Length: 116
Image (cartoon, rainbow, N blue to C red; front, side, top):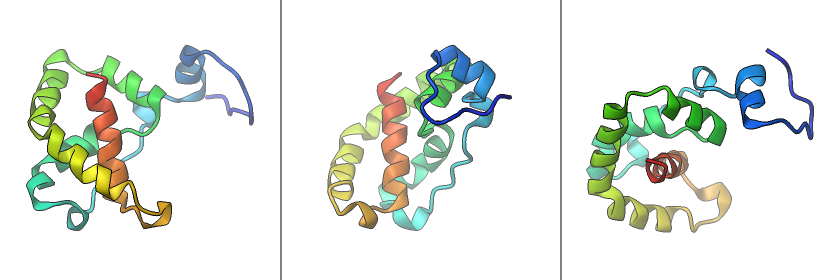
């Protein structure tokens, strides 16, 4: 795998194939349940699976998932969409350093949900 240099410009496919911005190199996401409202606890496995911050890695991950898994993810999150967005509106409108990690993680999951 090649190492990218600062300000390198490549196609998405080059970043994925040559520089490792792919599903296999996605981060391991662990959500602290103490930071999550109780009504969203059951969503933690979805956040840990789908809440990938990098657009390229997330896109590659989506491309490698069975459609039935994507459909299940979308169906479950749709049920909570409005409530999650209300919670994130409050959490993410604080001083940057005061935002809890779980809010960022849920935000990335919601980004993935919007891409379903």
